[in-house]
Image (cartoon, rainbow over all chains, first blue to last red; front, side, top):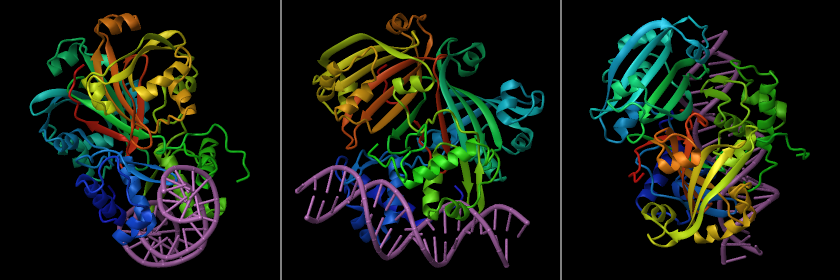
Length: 253
Length: 253
DNA sequence: AAGTGGTCTAGACCACAAC
DNA sequence: TTGTGGTCTAGACCACTTG
């Protein structure tokens, strides 16, 4: 996001991804060794490894010490290496995103909002309720609280059509991190009205707290998705993140 | 999982994590530069960077080119860098996991199972339905299909008490990768009976396909969690994100 | 202008897989 | 035994933030 659009390892990752997509390395096959690929692409072995890291994060291939890497699946249409906004995500699957503002006001923070944004209860926040639509069909309600310095910029955004995240980035507000909590909840009366569904329908609930690079809170949102219209997909590997040990290893080294 | 229990960068990661937990580097503060830390720990700068990568994946700190790294938050009790097995997760939050077997049989694969496991419809799979309980309270239904070579080992597992994942690993079956799809669904009659809740209650639905290092399918599972008993937490950053929003798979329910 | 993180190289050694 | 991926080092340059 910062830049590095021209990093060498990203080039290598793109070329490898394309080779896999083109069937040069079909699913289930083993990739050439890092040494060979390094020569092939004219880069160092470390750069090849850095590219492999990108592909592994996308779930495209697996590695095992001592054995060549295995191609796992056909490549995705796009890289998932970044946190996406609803708008970006919608466009990436060929849908037209839009929004319908239900509430936009300055109000005192409640307990949850204050805690998430690092404010005191009663401090002012900008509160936005938006119904998000895919090609005209309501699929999600977004209930977001912004700290004042962020919320003040909302007036610059066309909330019916534009991506808040993208527009705010143009004004120096960078969404760098997010913590999501996901569970299920039944639609209450307001959910039912806004999403045009029966009350009680099962919804996917996501609570999200986003911060900038320094960890300063940028938003606190409670979103509710229509269960059969949207799903989250997560890939993980044991190799991706080593288990946290309870105690540091005793070994001398 | 391969080994690397003694990797240097993991040592450095543990020591940094501890320093943050001990308040040496409080949240919001900037870490010393990589150069300084490398000297401090007596390792190369690259090794410090590798350790930082681990902490970043755990959401402990942020980085920005040109500026020192920022400590984001106090370390969490458990890392969600990987999705754990139900048993492991339950124990990590101090609950006692158990299971109640509802169905365990050999049967022909249906369409979804065959596709996920790389079989043809009608090929035999081992099908297991288990209610999982936390300290005696039902919180989840697990409906899992195993290919025969894996399912054959299930007879070695005490399904009421043990973790399948952990026991199978002792027999050379290594769960290395998984792809999860999460959405919401209402409880049907069977769900309601097994979980002892009213029909229609909002449930969190997870479809999971697990594979070994070579990408060979090990299981295909559809789990349903009671919405207010369980939630998933995920952290991500623009730099590296395991989270993906995806179009819902062709349902089937 | 100085300091810092991001990238890259060209080596090296080890543990493990595969032949 | 050979080859491979996993780890580690000691440099280097660049883009960016900060003072």
